[in-house]
Image (cartoon, protein in one colour):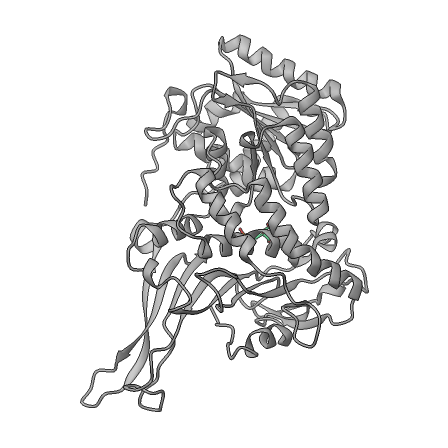
Length: 513
Ligand code: BG6
């Protein structure tokens, strides 16, 4: 276990990384994400001594709430959702710096009041504060918030040369290519690209960051990371939860927009991109955009389309019977929203020509598991051909993103004994065993990176547009089809038959992670 002694965050910056004096303003302060992830993330940064000496958190929302009440709400959120219990010491110092401003998102005067509040804090401490605006509201108010940050002068605040105001924007970043482009235009009318941090929390997961380290800090992978050795790649983001209380959002979104366009495409980009010239934000993102550009448009017509969709039916989750999607609260009885989506992608470049990339994600699946599985070609069968004696599996390198974070490699080994028999074996590296548990949550890393101004783990404007360019024709097609062609799968299973067919035409099958 890591050292749990709280660091006195008021007495200095991290030993390694430092942010200037900062005020974080959360728009959507009473939202679910704020309570579950954002406030706990800030608390844990405080606990680890990673916040600057002069740090403030301001919640902004429509509902008028006094500071003291917001502090209680924040304390409750930390108690319920933080990976650590709040301590009197750390929370005692953070609480008086946790404030609240109320107002409408389209009300310019409210943003002026916010500006006055920040100016008041600066006067009190005799220093300027960097502002980090976190937009965590429903997407309908993204544009008014951005415009008012511009109109009130808050977006253009400078702190010295380097530390301008910054904005983190939550998903969904648009619902198709056109709306993503409009949102990018809104943002860049007010902010420079370097001030904008489009968040995808998967990029903050430890194991996702480790993917880059594994690929580029080891010499054994790069020579075989191509079409000569790799047969295909499977990216799975499986959830066991259903739609829960989020049908209002999910009915407008569906799996393709909710998970595939962002999380799985990001995993693909990191797996397939070329080595960047350096690990800085622009170099890494240049390579991600390049590989996304090399993905071929999907074939959606004909008997064997590159995309499959389905809804969960009844079934068993954790041994308990559960309802099908259409019976869930707030779901339209004839809803055409997919709860599962799978894609078959082709990357047309020197490295990946002919290597299929399969992506899948869904709710109410057998297990919660996210992984990237790289399946290698089989060796020539001249010495060991598959038989009863020689049980052989293709070598598979799997990055387990969650849970049970780790890296595993399937190899074929000799079973000890007087005759030669073989059996696949698994080499397993587990984070928890080597590094202990209680690793930082994705939002901790990402909020800190944005405070510091490091955009490496955030999505650039051109990147999100390229991803939407690939995804938009799929949902247009599905929207036109309505429920025609919608497959179903039993809750608690590994998904629909159409997703199996997506691979079987190439002689492949989904691995059970
Ligand atoms: C979110 C989706 O982006 O990711 C949710 O909106 C999904 O529907 C969640 O449940 C999954 O995130 P994680 O970190 O639990 O895998």
